[in-house]
Image 1 (tube, rainbow, N blue to C red):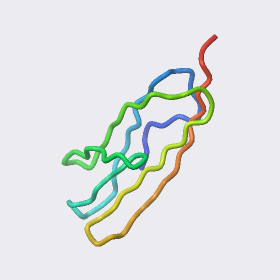
Image 2 (image 1 turned 30 degrees about the vertical axis):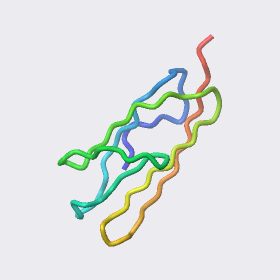
Image 3 (image 1 turned 90 degrees about the vertical axis):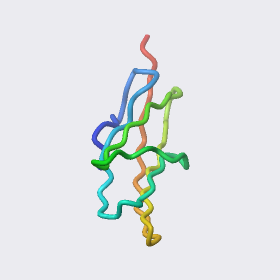
Length: 81
């Protein structure tokens, strides 16, 4: 579950935050193919820098049995004037 990823923003960077729902303690979590640390409560947080326009993020949770869950989120960045 992604708890902080707005659809639009005027900020140059944001923190993507959420919780990985998994009973498997060996689940790996990635945002755009980069592994992200998940704490003992399965929470994650990653600060990303946005480019003007469309920014697409692919969230991937992969458990030790090979089951993958993928969520795609697009954030539109419009620089403040």
